[in-house]
Image (cartoon, rainbow, N blue to C red; front, side, top):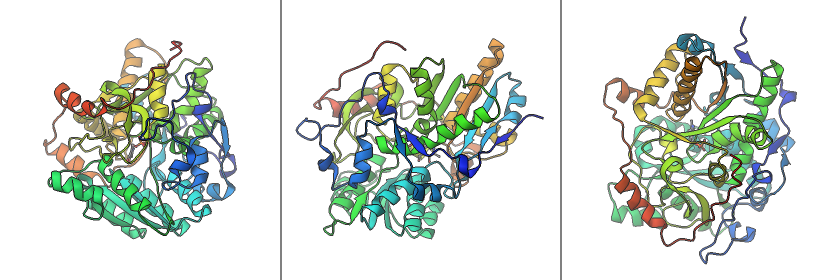
Amino acid sequence: MTTKKIFLKEDEIPRQWYNLAADLPSPLQPPLGPDGNPITPDMLAPVFPMNLIEQEVSPERWIDIPEEVLEILYRWRPSPLRRAVYLEQHLETPARIYYKDESLSPPGSHKPNTAVTQAWYNKQFGIERLTTETGAGQWGSALAFACKLLGLECKVYMVRISFDQKPFRKLMMQTWGANCVSSPSNETQAGRDILEKMPDTSGSLGIAISEAIEAAVSDETGKTRYSLGSVLNHVMLHQTIIGLEVKKQLELIGERTPDIVIGCAGGGSNFAGLAFPFVYDKINGAEIEIIPTEPEACPTMTRAHFAYDHGDTARMTPLLPMHSLGHTFVPPPIHAGGLRYHGMAPLVSQGIVEGLLKPRAYHQLKCYESSLLWAQTEGTITAPETSHAIACAIDEAIKAKEEGKEKVILFNYSGHGLMDLTGYESYLNGELTDYSLPDEELEKYQDALKDLPKPEIKKTGRW
Ligand SMILES: Cc1ncc(COP(=O)(O)O)c(C=O)c1O
């Protein structure tokens, strides 16, 4: 009988995170301050606790996971690695398709892996309240859950379009005791400024980040910090537990290193979590195709410049070296709310510049078509973000069939879609259309980058 689920015992959980920054062949360029000079860790101190800032800049390859963090992660980790045999049979592919099931955490995605970790480090540092933004609502509910477990207060600024599309996510956050408001809100200067200029805006992650940072740094007690669910190095780090578990699971069943590794990428964290331990293998000679996927409507990795840009619309964050559509980008209201961010993790961006990662963009309709095929073969209802990884896995499985090759395909099942059924409803009613960001629109947004410093394009040319 074919193995369909591969479990690790709790005591087999990885006890260290993997830091790709230690191994990138062309190193990351530093974040820059408003004067164009590299920022120092103390400049980040009003926003993040120092113990997380230390991780953010750490050059160490392996970083210990505190036992107390593992104790919290055991609630849902190690997560199962599954084989999509029913999809394989349907496609009549010789490929073996594996997927890491991150949908089984209490909030339903990979996001709590870093949410509980960040909440724990903040608590250690004496912080009492966290603020954040959320796009799809997955991150906001993950941080709400984490704060409740650690006894912290939580305030979430939720992008207006998702706030309206996904009322149940807001209720999940409230159930875990968080306060969730629609962004832009009237509660911050950044929100009020945007509302004055664009009262009908559908909002953006860039705007919601500005609000959440402002709310953190303006708390005079000094007991509030901001928490980001993706993009930053320490967030990528916390998610590597995903790929490190997969390596053990594949070894357990005698499976070889995958030929293809896939993850959808909004800010890059679930992709990085699965892929970075395999990027390490690729740097050391393994032949692996590693593919981050994104929507055609927000083509950050496939069409935007690698540039220095702010992580938020009000330009409160340092300048990060990343692929960016431009910090003023207001995305079209597609249903994959978590993939609408204007930027990308610097570690993922540098991996693309180096040629280690080969991004692809997918249209919304193809993604929903793939989700339906998935639901009708494997059975589960996937998050619209995850469907970008499934579409790519299906493409690769069909290609393997055409080439007659027994490939091993691995992707990250980053979350379930049970709170995203309005998107399915629109698709099933034939109300969704495909949308490619027009060149003129892209150029208009990229204009916001023109007066900012430019990063060097550093690559070894090995890939
Ligand atoms: C289910 C799911 N997958 C993927 C993402 C994209 O985020 P990231 O690129 O940080 O994994 C999100 C973001 O909200 C999400 O909810």
